[in-house]
Structure formats: structure tokens, C-alpha cells
Length: 290
Image (cartoon, rainbow, N blue to C red):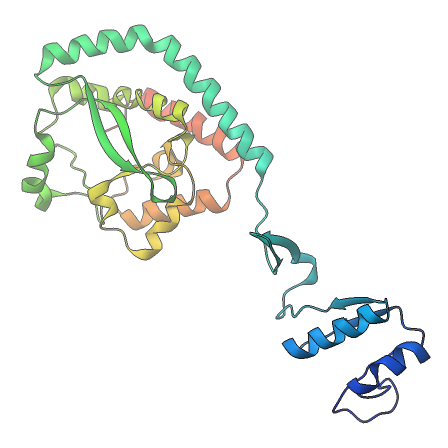
């Protein structure tokens, strides 16, 4: 029907001042009052009381700050209602299916390779002293740390020697990698070449700490060297393999690694995971691991 306003001239759609609200309600047979921005707390309460006295509906027209109304939704924060100006669409069904696939495939492969793991464990014991499994604290989704499992491919005390070798790092950025790392055992080179040392991480996948596909989890020392923008790669569960591993594995640049991780996160879908797993199988069979 129009407006009541304390400042605009009373003509056309402006039917009076706020003090005229009760009269306008009755005279115009108003069914609903809508309060528009900018808001004044005392004014809103006053109009709401007037609406309740006259038994008519009252609503507030929210300020959307230029956002598309189609992107707006309502929610709650505790017991308080909130207006969500934007909410990213999350593919919940696809995420659920990704987890189901992780559990099924990790369980199946662990059952199939258990005899192989037993043989490899015996060979590691014979090749060098130390435990069969290498346990490393890695940083996972949302910065939560977890114990990542690998078959040991280095001599005992390898972590202590890393600082002495830091100047020979062949990777640019936080993480450490050497093509001819002197800490790697003879058997360890074979295990790394065919990525056999990574198989125990299927247990991490089964537990939900990792996924079959995702950004590789970095050790805590590498994580401590992250820059702020690098933290974006921790928005999802880390993986056994990822886009970087099948497209730019020989590229020493951490920035290239990060670029591909973010590309995966932004364009993720189940079909992309399937393609990465297929390419990973080809990479493993070629024996290009280091």
C-alpha cells in the first residue's frame, strides 16, 4: 500500500509519519508491516509492538549488501536465527561416496596384500636394523596431526641426519627431497621405486585420516614452514596419491605442488579421483617413484 516515514514528504506512497501508523493500519486495512533498512532497534521494537496490538503480521526486509537473493538462506547459530548471504554448495552425496570407496578399496587391498607385507617386513629386518614400520607425524585435514605409516626405507636415525643434508635439498619450498639420499637402504630404493613403502597408509585411509586421493600430507617440520596461503591445501583430507603425483612428480617446485593441490580441491569430483587412481597405477608400474 505504501510507507510511513518521518522524513519524506507525505504524498504518493507516503501515507504519514510513524506516529500515524495505527491510523494508517486501520484506514488502509493493512495485513502486514515490512520494516526496511536502515534499522533502528527502538523503532523496530516500537513497530513490532504496534503490529501485535493490531494483530497484523510484521517482517523485516534484510540488507543483502549486494548479494544475489538466490544465494541467501536462513540458518541458526545456537538458538539465534541468522541470514546466510552466501553458502558454498557442498556435494554431500559425492563426499559420502568417496568415503565409502575409500573404506571398501582400502579393506580389500589390505586383505589381498597382507602376505606380501609379511614377506617385505621380513626382508626389511634382514636388510638393516630397526623397526619395520616408519611412523611419522603428518598434518591432515584442518591442521589435525596424525601418525602416518610407511614401510621403513631408511637407516635408523635418518631424521637426525636430515638437518645435516638440508643444504642438499632438491625441492624448492618447505619439504625435503633428494634423488640420491644416502640414508635410503638398498631394499628401500626398490620399495620406493614401486611405491611399496606407501602401502601401510591404506590403514590410515581405512581409519579416515587419509583418502585414496588428495594432497599428500606433509611432516610437521615442513608444515611449520608453510606460508598463510599454503594452509588452503588442508581444507580436505590428505591422500595416498594426488594430481601432483601423476602430472608433475619430477617438478621440484613447491609452488607447482601447491598449484596442483588447489586445482584438485577447486575442481574435485569422483570422476577426477578415478582418473588420478588410474594414472597412479600406470606411474607405479613404470617404477618412477623416488
